[in-house]
Image (cartoon, rainbow, N blue to C red; front, side, top):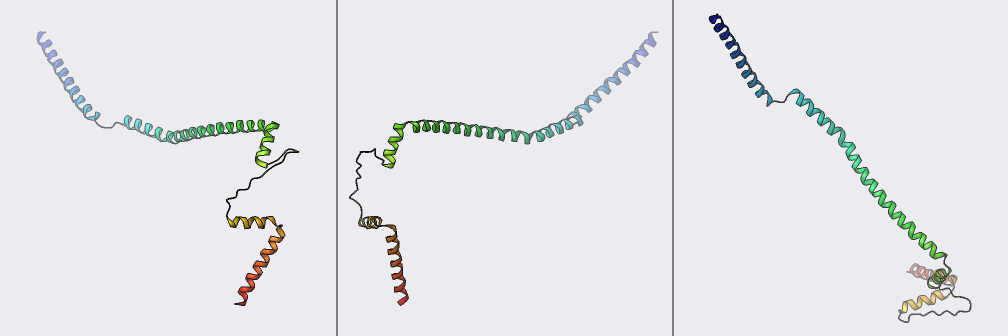
Length: 160
């Protein structure tokens, strides 16, 4: 029985040695394979790339819409400030004292019984004084003088 046991153990040993060698060969093969791209990794890379491509356009739209929203908010704030200024101006224009002040300054209005004075600057040129003389005449006189001047200039060039 010891011989059978030894033989059995040798067979068992050979079998174990064969399994051990087979495991080493399998490990060597898998180590070489690990450097290569597997099918699962390729599929995962394809899915990630497709997600990036699919989300690129919506993300760009999202970012551009956020900037548009910020710009619209800024414009709305500016419009609110303009409305506030216009309301203040409207309130000022309702005040009779302010209206009277503006009429005196801008339109040179006077109250009944007041005397207004205008100061003329004496430093003007001679051309300006001739223009003021033409402005003092009625419009139809100026028009007729212009027609006469044009007629005289046309007749003088026709004689040549």
